[in-house]
Every structure is written in C-alpha cells, then in structure tokens.
Image 1 (tube, rainbow, N blue to C red):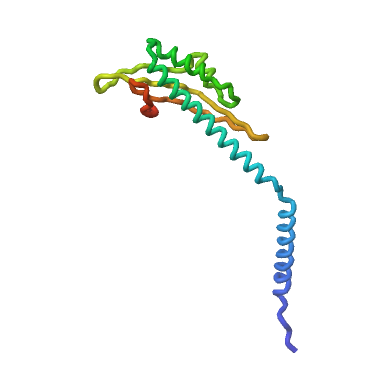
Image 2: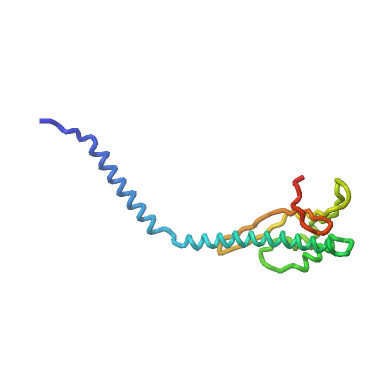
Length: 163
C-alpha cells in the first residue's frame, strides 16, 4: 500500500482560515466606519474657501487703498493710505491683523525714483499679515507678506521681486 504525502494539508487549511479572518475583519471595518466623513470634508472645503477669500480680500483692499492714496492730492501718501484702509474696515472676523498693522504704522508705503530714467513708482510692503477661518472644530491661520509695486497713476504693476 502506498502512503499519500499529507505535508501540504496544514498550510492549505491555514490559508483558508486567514482568508475568512480577513473577510470578517473587512466587514467589521465597513460596519464601524464613521459615516460623517463627507460632512468633515465639506467643512474643510468651506474652511479653505474662506481662508482664500479672506487673503484675496486683504490684498485687493490694499491695492484699492494704495491707488486711492496715490490719486489723492495730499502730499503724505502714507497717512492717506492708512486713512483709506481704516475707512474700509468691514469688521469681519477672520480678516486678521491688516487693520492693526495700519493703526500701528507697521507698513512701508514709499515713493521711489526709477533707476532707469525719469519718473517714479510706489512700493507698498506689509510684513507679518495673517488671516484666519474656522468651520466646526477645524481652524486655520494663514501667514503671508505683501509687497506691491504701483506706477505713478496708482495702477498695480506687480509684486516686488525678492531682495
């Protein structure tokens, strides 16, 4: 009588047991998965949209205020710029510290002569700005600096080149 080799029976049975255990584990994970992940994702999208809007608002406010100050007849453009920014304060939560920077004169708004010939331009630099937003329990704060160049007519010409 011939003996049959039964050495492969134990590993084959273990594969079957492990496969069933993995199936049961995956069913358990599906049943206990937190279903409000979509809501969390929506809150994060709202948060990012709000922070982008706040930053964009601050930059556009500074552009508008700089143009108004340049076009104004007064000699002290820096003081006029500060007044215009303060006048346009919407008192919205999340606008950060831009209005505080203006009140504390923590900005640089200067008239600079062109190095390549006649004329001049204006340079606005505000460092250490931030905006913030919150949605649910999520909060975010974005730090940024602003450096903008304006021509003699007050038109925005671009951001400063890093020095």
